[in-house]
Image (cartoon, rainbow, N blue to C red):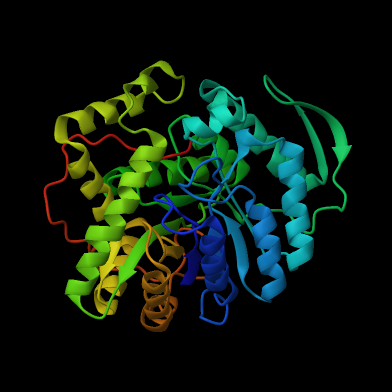
Length: 393
């Protein structure tokens, strides 16, 4: 199974200088290939210490020069935040600089501070995302940008340098909603499952998407990419500390950044169900909700981490897994130890697991599994009636 690394460049409490955060994360990135990872993925964020990643294609181009086989992905590029031509040009350039190793993750965004910083209306994001995604993927396929929509109107222009290769088959959307199923299926995009909603909800969404993809394209959908935050340690006690301190801090930073406790989402087109989420937090308490988010991730000894990740892989019939080992204001020495143990004792065992092919392999490929999903052991009861909380479409 394809096994990738996610780096998020987080500095939520400003314990380090931003320069120190970059120095450490760049070191982890530069040795990803030699450590056995097959890809590196970085999210896009702006204007806060939540994640210091405003120009991901630029970072990936730097990483391309440090490596020779590593695939290079965005987790995700938020399409409404930039002109579609610039997005297409960035990925054309990345492909030429890397020999075709780019992977395009796309989404529509949720952080209000980021929409405000770009002087954009959040209520337009779903419609902008739909138009921009169609224009970009068609452009990367044909070599020409051309579109006439509600928000995006672009006379025909040629992309130069011409696209190295189409991005169909290596494009993934970070979440899916009923409103986005037809779009993603029609564009041939796969799904990137970021562990931020109940697994039964993810399974139901995946089934709907696969059904619709088959109807539209006459072939099976790509298997999803599973994205999780991972804490691995030699003992269960040490791993529990990674969960209680760092996974919990990351979960709280997510609630803070996305304002999940803000009932004002009810007034924003396309974000109405986040108001239900805020009521759930008010009912059950922020600490309990953050524990629920933390418990969707993976932590344990190497044996436990392998078992739990593969349980999720089987449950979703995933074709790849991407793991983040540095988060929640881990000191550099803690994240480095987590990274090294993950690379040494977990990654080789995941890569030996047969899912039928490399990232992008289609549903139905590979052996049929009898094993059941091994969910992370949860120390407490999950908040009831938790709405889905996918961050993007």
